[in-house]
Image (tube, rainbow, N blue to C red; front, side, top):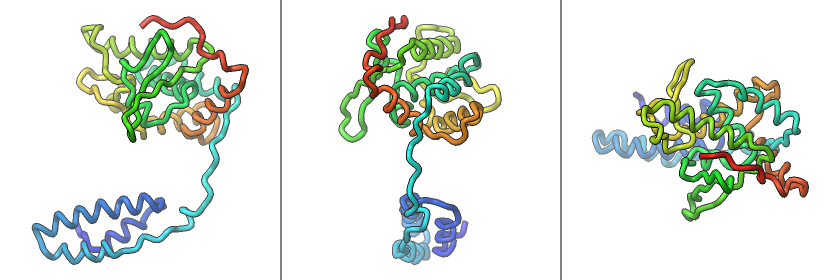
Length: 243
């Protein structure tokens, strides 16, 4: 591997990356060169040249960002209909993901960190811990129907079916699936799914529903807009599902 400053510069500007991403990659490459310089002093020169490299902003960095789109009720139902009747492990998980994004306004990083112990079936709330101060925050499930709770119950039953002992479910609400066409929950893969997977689920669901490009921010903004209306202040008062 040629770690010359010219090659690293070409690597940093070879793709249409944001300014912050380029700075982050430059920092990683600096650490790599610093460690390599302990074995070969010639890498020290490359480290100094890279350290002095100025990462300028590009036209992409200054371009206005797309504002989140608010979906209509019909569009929300189109999204939910994509996975509603899919009984595969992937379909059950994806349906639960779309329900949670639409009816909790939760962020990706918070969503993937959720555990089953964070779900209160009776009060219909989720609890997550904020990274910056480690404080617990309660998020209500604002679904006026019981669809989201049923989706979570179906997800829990699917995960339990993988284990011989039904009382030993996965810790995470959204554990990673195996790869491949017939992706499944695996007993020895009890790790949370990634935020990139959540983005892929939203993208794939939007394409299947014929809604074009969507991001999880669109679903979050839809939830915030929909349930800030006075007529929805009583949402989430349906009968709780049994855990």
